Amino acid sequence: MNPIIQSDQLILKKTQRNDLAFVLRVENENTPFIDSWTRDQHIHTMESIDMEHLIIQSVSTGKAVGYMIMTDLHNPHGSYYLKRIVVDEKRKGFGKEALRLLKAWCFNELQAHRLYLDVKEFNKRAQKLYDQEGFSIEGIARECRKEGDQYISLVSMSILKQEYKEEHQ
Image 1 (tube, rainbow, N blue to C red):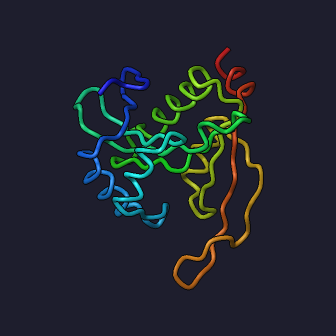
Image 2 (cartoon, rainbow, N blue to C red; image 1 turned 180 degrees about the vertical axis):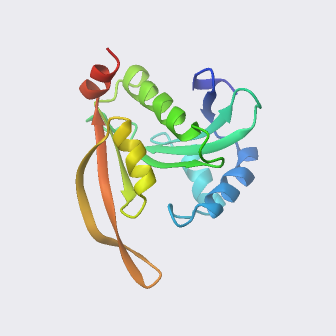
């Protein structure tokens, strides 16, 4: 499968059905930070014209190191949603590099106006990464999600095309 975009370190490419065992394993290992989906939910996303399900692959090993899900790719406002980013091997820079590739693809190829996401409020490490990569906090949806017997809040963050362009001048 041809890459959507790549760097010296990583390739972003469309997820295939044979990638789903990896996706489900990594997702299960990261459930405190993301919601778990069924195999069918992932397949639906892969088949949708308004979403992209992407594998993050290491150039050096050829192995999958994570995955991403993008939605709202055909909305008339050019505001695209990063639904999920999950990296299997932590603290190797894969998340940061994958996010950089995603921003380049969204703003340069897809001509997005805005890229946004929600992150669980307790996930400070992810918030720090998004902040370092130019995302601004837009607000907090207080206790909007019930997980088990407790409610959690989501932090909404975004980056605009102009902000992306300014950081790449």
